[in-house]
Length: 487
Image (cartoon, rainbow, N blue to C red; front, side, top):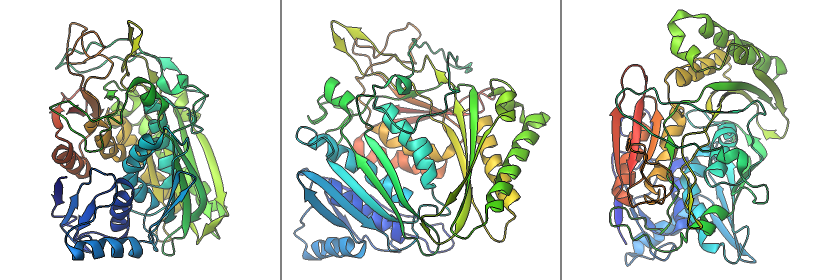
């Protein structure tokens, strides 16, 4: 076992610093699923300690106060666990409008690794039902989860998914614009498009009811399966023997290579109005977003934005969708804008030598997305314009992911198997982690300015796994930073 202590939690927040109810619920759920114990986990705490457990079960501490606190945390956050024919069902209820998406972020890896351990005797081992706010301010919208995170996860593990990108997506080759380093990569087809339909998605999200501030009450069910790609190519249940990288779960993931910015081939605007909110609110949000996108295209100050598009028709033919959410608690409105890059054919590779298949780095480009919630004090056109400005900034930055997705990639990079497949981008001779030698394969992600969340996630991941992150600022032509995870 080992203990990790995180201090200064939200210490600079002017109002209500420290742990909030949704954060506490997320930590408690992660421990309930993944094992271990928490110390000083309470609302308002600015320092929390986590003690890992090799058994994968919630720890029992010699300190009775710690054990009582564990039970109180589970009770306070309405945590329940049922074992039904070998399947584990969890219920996590914040009791508030706290973000369900944040709860999912904190419990995703424990749930997935639990599913991996149970894969030999159950095809659908883990289900979590979340209750709280589906669309909350200051947190990812549940629509961002379904449009960006879920397709990424299912592509990453080579599984099928119902959250498929628009049919306009096409295959192309994108070359790095960096003048600082030579990057040689081999051709690779889109892992998302080629994932076998015979394999169910390892992550399936079902929104049963929307819940809005201040009442919450939203219900989302998430089902986890074990990735068949890993169970075929790697025995991830065995301990990781690499001396330079350790995971307490014994789970390793494929490396990630997202270093080339593919052109934007299509865009979608989804605006919703829920409960008693009238439909014209959503329509005005769409109008404000489209107007801002058109203005940016025509502006000389947004040349980096225009460079990312295949052609002007992408802006002119943005797909729009206006949805009335009738099954909800409370009323609300919001907008989500998604930009779909083309699929790069040289962000990784898949090789087969001596009938041995190696895991390839991710070749699917995640969409870029932005969102905004409706506010009675803000005109809906302004709400739509705000969301559009955010996606414009994300596209113009030259990164492969938006600012909200940066920190969500850190755990995948930290747990990546440094002997996985693909080509080492730092080698100019074409050799690397393609199964032909023992060179190290690094995960690399090209992104915009690092957020504080990302920097914090990198620091915590280094402390907990032993991996090392390096951050390199590229030249002005790249308009981005390079995040490279060394395992």
